[in-house]
Amino acid sequence: MNAALPFTAAELMAVTMARLLGDSRHVAVGALSPLPATAALLARALNPALRVTILGSRRHNVFTDGGRELFDCAAQGRIDTFFLSGVQIDGQANINLVHTGDYARPDKRFPGSFGSAYLYSLVRKVILFKPEHTPRVLVPRVAFVSAAGVSPPHEYRPGGPRHLVTGLALFDFADGHFTLRSVHPGHTTDDVRRETGFDYAAGVVNTTPAPSEVELATLRGEVRREVAETYPRFAAKSFGG
Image (tube, rainbow, N blue to C red):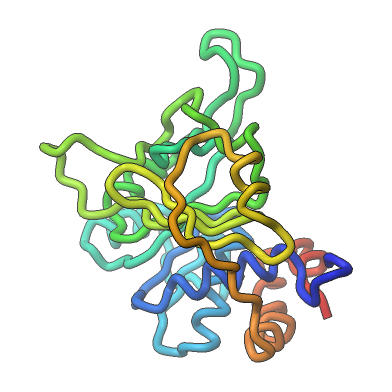
């Protein structure tokens, strides 16, 4: 926890992401995604009508055939929001989950794209997230496009990126570019500009609202216990209180 703030960076990101789910009926979270899982469970705790599906969870996943049923559900338009991240994200909201460096002789290789391109195109609202906010990960152009943020006009694409939440800020995405919406407490617009490798628009920029007492209490109680079922280490280290 930041000594100057009464909440952790993970708590602020989770709350910020949860607040973006107000118009969703069904939120799905992929495997190995503890931060989006926390955000989705917080949103459901505050709005019990919200349906949450978390791959890898025994308690919060009604699918019996893993990703295949999730993909079918997305194709039918029955998932409103999904979360995606990558080792790199660029200014057109392209994400890279494959490698860094030259493709033939990469510096590092990563697990791969799986269904990211498919879900990116079909789910109405995709929220990108990245706790690390540095020019190393927020780049002018990704080394490999695992999933494209924008598509040619002739391609059918009902879904796509709407927001990016990082450890420093919240961006909105529209018309092929990011706009800085708010900067997290303890940071400045200069911090964000210095640590962002891609260009973005910035008009009136607010401070990201801090978690409320109700949000923090819910996170550190009910949500922490639910997250621990799938991500015990994350739950043990990411919450304050």
